[in-house]
Length: 269
Length: 269
Image (cartoon, rainbow over all chains, first blue to last red; front, side, top):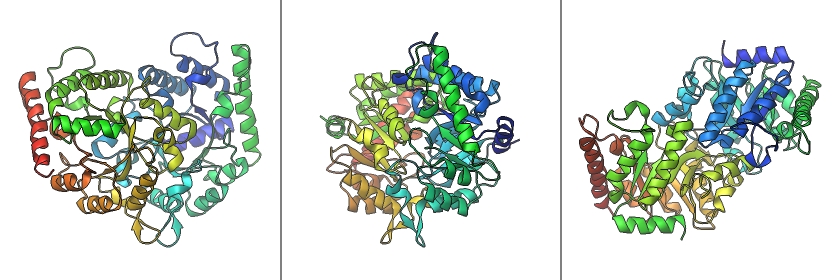
């Protein structure tokens, strides 16, 4: 099986296209986490609370970039796998040659062992080569992102009046020789989401439906390719318990947030 | 002082624009390193051997992405600072909003404490905002990279016949309100290096003069802005001792490689 086949099976098993974004900002963690590595303790309980409603988890590498963070990330990947959850490492990595091969260790089973990774297209095809050829692993190429500055370069017209993000989408589709390439296209840009869907049949990772206020209907209608794709919420799920007075109350709210997003998205599937 | 002022002073003090790239590939480390954290032991000896000839060191984040790696990276940053060496973290990071703020911790003095970072432009200005406003810190925006696939998107014509990398250079110059923005432009693309220099007066980080065979003369002629800029070699310096039978022999060759590159570049300064 490859990553997208595994994801398809997981979507069927959980009846969910929800990606739970694991962005354990130390400044927002609840006070009642026990034990070492608070980010890991937090992620473990988030996974416990949400896995029945989750197609995958998406740890954001920025929140793990220190020694304890990488230990927490390793534990998180192993624990997610134990629950049958694919792990998409949101690293937005991109570098060339021997460096790209090192980044590919993040996916290698004797490395971090994530199942898929987000990558940035600016450095071109050879920067993605080490991941493209990893059997069973997936990658999501940044195409149209959710931030206001996403337009600065991504919307520039290249060639015959086509914006750069559409050109990126088409090149990514050409590179998809092993059925392991998807795109990151934001739900805060629903018109662009539709435009990219009309160009390519790749699965999308759609961020922006939670705290960023994106369009859930467009995320589902255009994000899935033959039913396969993921719609991510990070803060909208993992911090849904803020204000709770006990761990049980906190993570119960987290689980409810995931379940609600699943139902909201399933209206449109 | 800001990063580029510090770099200017360092260039004057060492009479060198050499950046020593710290890419401690575990598969290429010499066998005679003692103690814990081999990558740190290696970097320490590389710094000892090269610091007199180095304007800065440039650890490549891809080689530190595991728990021990981040410990090695922290030690390396502290040790480099102890030798007066600015540290450019080559992370090619780029993400939005709250994630970008986390990545900025890599520069924060209570975080990793690097002095500058490489960043990818695809996500636009707001993705760079957290770094742009950090007093004293520098960032190098990827502009034209050294790999063959660098042309896939960077060379696309946008607007009035201008390639994307030139547009990126101009936007980066506009964002340089605090004199803390530079560009990454490769020595393996000397014509593009000249073109970008003719457009903007930012300092460049020029990779590609070592193992990648780039043009050292063009790197110096076009890479420096008022004498400030850095020309990086990684493998060409740090693995120059390969084949040596003792640590002394190995690191002596490393030091010699840095000194030779300094002299080679100084011919053109």
